[in-house]
Length: 264
Image (cartoon, helix red, strand yellow):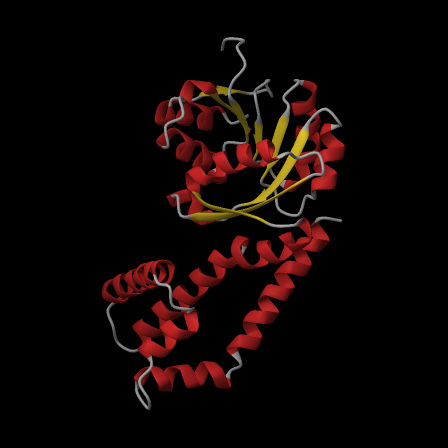
């Protein structure tokens, strides 16, 4: 590997790190300007083959760093990045506060915190970002330019990040659980597995696109499907009797509380 400074160094070549790199390459970034730091030699070889990026087993200098490692490893990695003279870091680790990031990188580096979700793997993610007091508009724009390669980016104050994590970060798992339950119910009602599976997958795909593309609220879209005394109304009545709204609120509340605990 040559010694020139990369445009971006990505520390961590796992699912999310790889997805972000893939999105950047597809959006027009020159892969030779991206270095992925990964200790797994097999992952390095795959990234070089699939995306054409450079790889390294040690942290190297770059114009900016994307940190995609486990939360427990973030502080140590931040310190390594700062030691290379890299001026900006963007962390996608759950629960690690901007203050913790900024303290780890020191006063000469700017820290941004982000919470992406797994639909970033298909470039349909949503990511919330917040920055330290040292962040300028240029720093925010830099972070957004990276993350927008895999979906929507929103800015929030850090005090809202636990709620973002609970809704958007953990949210795909809630959706997948509902799909899992619908699939099981469809099979129990007599549908063959392959038919039920195709129905459920397309149901979530189509409904998601309709929700994203429509100017109607979720409530209005629900009402448009629900004829008085019809089949949908009968099904929804069971959800209401089971206090689904309260359950969902408690789910989000529990996930947000866990996010807050992880940040302490």
